[in-house]
Image (spheres, rainbow, N blue to C red):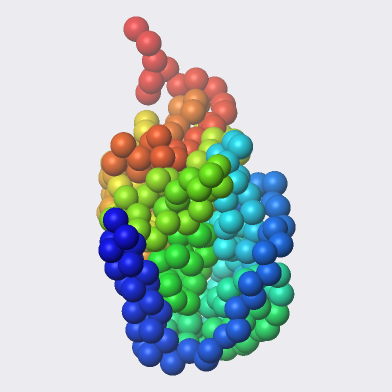
Length: 336
């Protein structure tokens, strides 16, 4: 057992060395202050918090500021965990820009953080997706710019070694690069990101456990940060609405089989590309570090369940609710 633990420690050390060589990171002095992290009542991101559609027909410089901060919050009732976040939520805020825009992004690392952080946006063309330029020590900030050349929906995440630890602890989100011609009109848009938590119970304290990351067997597979995020705070719509869900999979490791029980996706932008669509899809595959966009019309009221159709993950937290109000439609769905 001791030799196994030694191998794990050595493996982590090697990963750190490799990461610093690949990205040419500066060295950081890491705080060892043992004070408790700030407590956040609800870590989960409200799925309805989607930036407004971009209506301008021209390119511009878009300035974005994000703060990395380590906080404590509940994974599920009564169980607290030290999350690492962008803007104190998991996922971090959804970002929305237009194809051709130049983005000036400032990443701050809160002075209370105990670790360096960074950001890698999959929408970026350039080494590290921005991570090479944004390795930020606690209390510092860095700014870089990039041109959003490719439309689509892209994951962003921390890329500071050990990278799986930063992602699993909650440092991820998505950025939408709208195509120049814009998007079709819908009535409701939602933002949902699947993530994995790898934890162990140390004398009643829930801690990150890298050995479980290596086995790719997360204790939790969650939508929007915690086990009950989208059942405590359901998505809400009504009969007659056309709905668009921006769905991402931060990983670290698992492939998601995204499905809404009782609905068929009228349109799926596979792998979140606007180049082609599929119609009348029951379940769509979303790889780790990938995304999709789905659209569908609501004809029947009731509660619809959002799931990863690898259904053993239901009890781990891969479950959400969409509450649909309105009049019954017996022509489409009724008891006989």
